[in-house]
Image: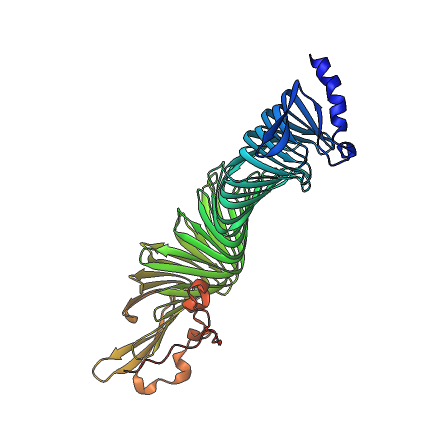
Length: 521
C-alpha cells in the first residue's frame, strides 16, 4: 500500500507547478495517505501517518497535517518535529502552523526548542526563521548547562544564543537565585543582565536588591549591582555600583557607598570600598568617614582612608583611619594624622599631632588613647609632651603640662589629671565676691590636679616642688601661659564637615523650580 501511494504521489507533485521545487516552497516528501479536503473554505491536502514536509533545509515531521498549496502553508498535528541541520534547530510540539512565505512557525502545547546551547520549554511559541527568534507569551522555561530561567514572556535567538525574559522572571543557578521583571541572558557566556526591581540570593546567604538592575555572571560567579544593596551576614552595603564575587568572597563598591556592620552598630561611608570577606578586611577611601552608634550619641571619624578589620581567628576587631583624621562626638572632638579604634576594649588610639577638645578643655600629646565606658569618655592616657588646657567661666586658661599624663572623666567632664614627670601647672582661683582671679604657678616632678566645673579644686604635688602665688594686680599676660601654649579652638571639627550624609544639598533655582512664595503673617 505504501509503495502504491508513493508512485501515485509523483504526478500529483507536478500539478504544484515549477514553484514546487523553488527554494521557498513547502513540499510534501511522504505520508501514509493523502486526500483532498476543504478547510475553512480553502483547498488542502490531508496527510496522515508518518508525514514528512520539507521547506528549504528544514524538515517537518508529524502524525498528520493539512497542506495548503495556495498559501504555501501547513497545519501539523501530533508529535510535531522541526529539524534544521544548517541552523542547528530542533523544535517539537503537539501542533504547528507553518508559513513557507513568511517562514514563521507557530507551535503549541508541550513545546521544546533545542539547539547546541539551551533547551526552551513552553506551551506557546512563535518562531521566526528569518530572524532565528522564538517568542512565547504565556510562560516558558530556558534550561542550559548552568542555569534555569522562567518567565511569563520570553524571546530566544538561536543564532546569537541571546534571550530576553519579561514579567515574573526567575533565574536559578547552582550558586545564585534571582527574581526580576526584565532580564537579558546569553547562554554561551552565562551572563544575565536584569533591569528594574531585582532581588537576588547567593548560595552563601547574601541578598542583593536594586530598583535599577544588576549583572550576574554564573560562569565566573560574580554580580554587579547598580544603585542597590548587598546584605551579608556581617554587613549591609549600599552604593551606586556594587560588585560581589562568590568564588573569592570579594566585594567592591563605587560612589556613595554605605557599609553598615550589624554587630557593631557601625556605618562606613565613602566613594570607594574594597572588602575581602575571607580576611574580614574592608577598606574605604575617597570622602571616607564612619559613624559608630553609642546609645543616644554617635562617634564620627573622617579620614582619607578607613580600614575595618574583623579577624575571628585572631580575635581582632578594630578600625583605623589614615591621614588628616577628624573626630566628632557630642562631648568630644579631635584630630590627628591617624586614629585607630579597638572595638574589643573600646579604646581610641591617636597618633601624630593629636588634639582633643572636650567641652571647654583642649588636650594634646605626641600620642593619646581614649578609653570609652558606657558610651562616654572614661579616661585618657597621654604620652610625651602632654598638655591640657581648660577654660573656666571667666575665660582664664588653666594649664597642665608634663611628660605623660592620665586624665579621668566623669559624665564627660575632667575630674582629675595625674602628671608623671616634668610637671608644670598654671591654674586660677576665682574670688566669687569681686569676680577676680589669682594665679598659681607650680613646677614639680609629679602632681595630681582635681577639677570641679573646669576649675581646679585641689592640687597635690610630689618631689621637687616649686610654687608661686600671684595676686590679681601682679598678674602679667606673658606669665599666664606655659611654654608651648596654643589655644586651637578654631580648628575644632564640626559635625557637618565630617558627616556628608547630613549635609543638605544646595537648592538651585530654575524656571522649572521657582522659589516658594513668602508666607505673610
